[in-house]
Amino acid sequence: MSDFVKPAIAVLVPTVGGFISGSITRSNIENWYEHLKRPSWRPPNWLFPVAWTGLYASMGYASYLVWRDGGGFDGEARLPLALYGGQLALNWAWTPIFFGAHKLGLATLEIGTLWGAIVATMVTFHPVNRTATYLLAPYLAWVTYATALTFRVWQDNKDRTD
Image (cartoon, rainbow, N blue to C red; front, top):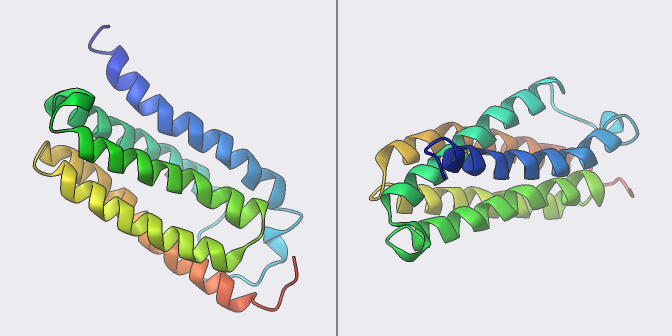
């Protein structure tokens, strides 16, 4: 495989997964999300797909760097890549919980777990490839913000039945 194909695949995996998960979001914005109480400090809806596209690409490339420098799945990259896969699964799971099932409390718990998984991933990435760790920093910042936003939406909509 060429030197271009491997990182491209690493970038495509989270991006495609995010796109698939995002289809749940798109179908629930007008009919449900727009009717929730939301804080004034939430970003506009158009910013989410833009931000997530960049974040997915960055985290995918970070995983490639760790895979490359850590000997793949059989080397020292095994644990960091397992944690990366776990946090990626948690990332993709948030959307069906929040937008699909409308379980705001569970989504708050889930995104808090995701935050911890991102930190664990960054800690294990660091000895393998520092650049990969730094590439995850904007992702952690965005998820920190998204965690606060999810919590606030949950708190402001606890009495809703849907």
